[in-house]
Length: 253
Image 1 (cartoon, rainbow, N blue to C red):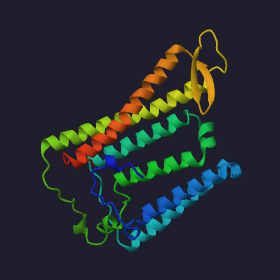
Image 2 (image 1 turned 90 degrees about the horizontal axis):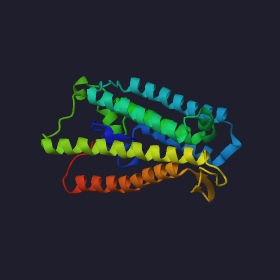
Image 3 (image 1 turned 30 degrees about the vertical axis):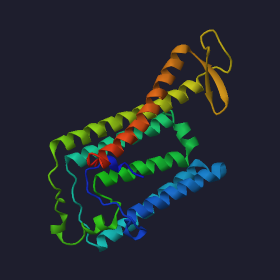
Image 4 (image 1 turned 180 degrees about the horizontal axis):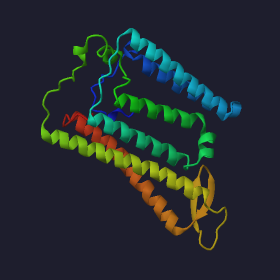
């Protein structure tokens, strides 16, 4: 649900609902609300959709702040790696939103709940990287009360080759992710600029949801190349992740 693959923090993943943190439950409510508004279509204006999103976000934030005061929560400041992760996640999510909306405010408004849902994912992921929110209640409780509990969790020494492989995989994963987002953006922008009929320069067909437009051979070559790399990169990344986790026992976060 979040981009925790980039996080170095040892935030245990909850296996039951009671073990889920209050903030993650709030995020789930936010996300569910965005899905409901997607189903409602144009029943609500973008102003109404944004009002609902901001209202839920503020409500969860206020209740979370009150809860933290009651439990004597003490923030465990992030290290350089966590700060870098937060900046990276923010940049990646901003690029994703921009690419999928064609870097257009009007299209962001048109997509409404979907765009707001993606923004919610990005905000939660950044806050998680900065150790402000957690996915598990256990991780939250570990930062409450006695200050001695705020020490960094100790991990057993890791062979250097595993660390190198982990960071190489994360780098490759980011590149595949960026290429995939770029592929969708190029396809969409090229399709919208296409001609409904063959012209002197636009002779190559491009199909999207049963509709055909015509683009230049150079544009078609670019779209095909990006989509081919995407179709190879995504399954390869998934297969490689399973191999590293299950066979080489390399920790990916």
